[in-house]
Image: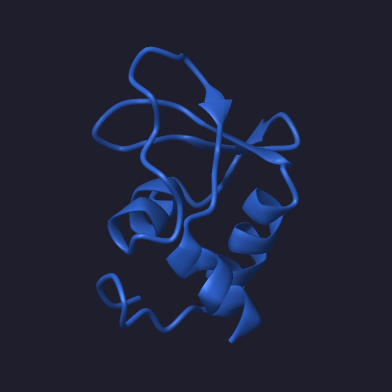
Length: 81
């Protein structure tokens, strides 16, 4: 996946982004944010950091252990696009 604004999503990343958009995900804080889907940790341990770095989901709130993951405007455009 390329940087923000130029993302080419893999099928896995697109599915993860759809899960975030559907409100099924939580994101843990840290330098490698943990993405949790339907209560289970994502098997792709780098997915949360990758989607945050690409600007597709909002960074985690460091004050919340596992807060809701939120999709950015760029993320919505990628899903529609």
